[in-house]
Length: 87
Image 1 (cartoon, rainbow, N blue to C red):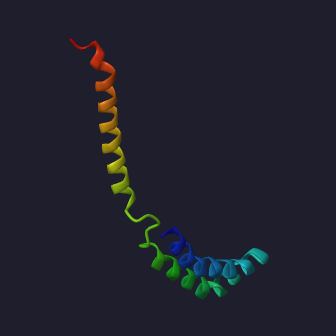
Image 2: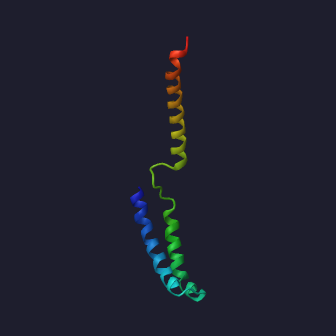
Image 3: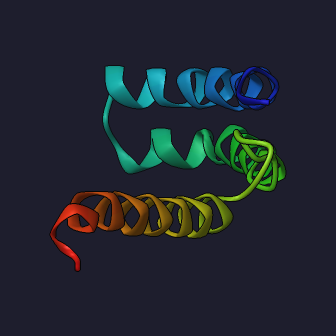
């Protein structure tokens, strides 16, 4: 999924490069105004790719699962380490 997202973002990146090259060569408000259409197109392409997730699940789900798994592993490990001391 990360590869697909990168492929979809690449056209926006290319447009940003095209738009900012003249601004970099001759930084002025007039040049920026001339490049507005390219910048708007690049922004539109970039916004279209925002919903594409790099992972098959969102970050909040991954965090929740990792927290539960870590807690369970810590509980089991603590029980194993404390078992010999219990009577």
